[in-house]
Amino acid sequence: MAPTSLYRAVFRRHVTFLRQMRQRRAQSTKNDASPTTKSAGPESEIPVPNQVPTLPFWQRLGPLTRAAEGFARMQRKRPYATQLCSSLVVYLCSDLSAQSIGGREYDPTRTARTLVIGGICSIPSYKWFVWLSLSFNYPSRLLSLGTKVLVNQLTFTPIFNTYFFGMQAALTGSGPTEIWEHIKRTVPVSFVNSCKIWPAVTAFSFTFVPLEYRSIFAGVFAVGWQTYLSILNRRAEDDAARHNAVLVSAPSIEKMAA
Figure (cartoon, rainbow, N blue to C red):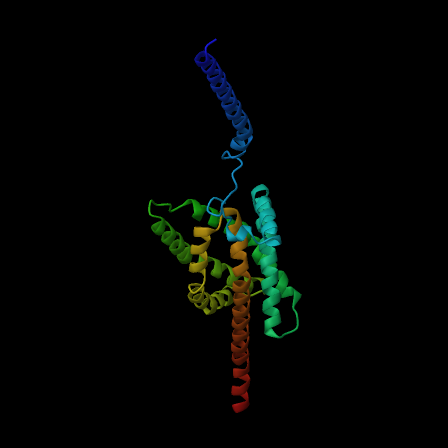
């Protein structure tokens, strides 16, 4: 064999060997990279801050969040029983708070009257706010919210305040005339003061709070509000008692003067 033919044969074998080695390396690299490629898919990507969904603030409060979620489950399963129990708790706390602020000896009869009033109005109040949440839903969200707040303030608030103070007077044994006088002393003042807090609470509730949590959200403010109503009711009772005492003592004074 000529030297030139020998060199060509050796060169061909060398080139063939290099091609085979290159193919083997490429195949080996592909097999090693395939698990990494699979694990780098969208399901196993490491989340970055802008990809992690943030929970609402009220869902990140630990024990308070779990308690609220338990209340929501009860609300969905037994709405009426849940509303009744929560209303009784709100009215009990408000009455105890009002009596402690008054500085007088604790009166269990007053607490019993308050619980009766709260128990009677719990289900109607709940049904009212459910109806209000399903009504007045216009294309404009701002118009819907403003209408809900206005309707609630102009209808529910004066009716509820009239019921509360009227029942307080009725349960103490007052007659129709005394009940009406008691309502006239308390309802206008309470309505004016309610405009300072409840429109904002109602607007925030309908905007940010889910339906099953609205009653417990409003209940937080209702404790303070019912405390105020109880104090206002007691002041009206004291004013009525002083007025009656003056009327009773007036004939005696006239007789003594005569």
